[in-house]
Length: 113
Length: 115
Image (cartoon, rainbow over all chains, first blue to last red; front, side):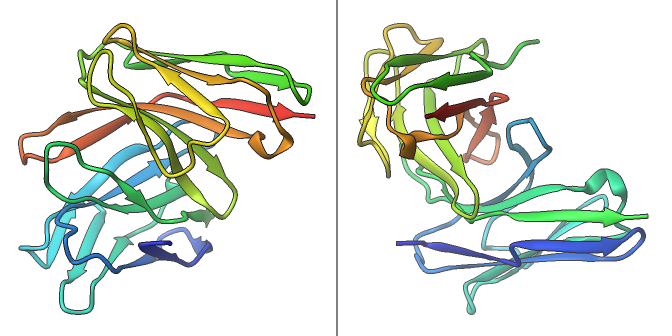
């Protein structure tokens, strides 16, 4: 049972363009939504995260938009650069003593010059 | 500043062979995890540990065993490898950030092929 659905599976964007990756979740108990970035041959690393009490969070060129009523959230990469080429995973967790992290299936982003 | 270290980085096994993947973290994290990553399926949790001496099953535990005898180490064992276990394996550890949520720190992965 996939609780976090991510799209698209792959994405090609020109340098300077906007990259948009979308995720949808089912479990309304989720209350923390991180995004992880993974470069080839490396493990994923936390990029940015949001809680459902805000609709947007921005860190540099990376922005998360969150729609609680639609149970959807998305990652926007402004002014995309070739160095942003990586696989991006959205995820969701819920508060508690131990938090199980549910990952989306990943989006492979390629930014071409 | 090692973080999470996995060994080995690559391994080829024949069906039925056994092996152990080692994960070590130097951040004094309580929680540790083993994930497998397969194309189109994202990261799936195999087993996890919430502290020294404890282990628990994740989403896809069959065919794997784990041990956490020391806080800094988390071992993943394959008793009788099968081709379906061909995958990239990631170890992770976590701590609770200032916002109260766990943040995962991943190793660089082990690419395992079972022939």
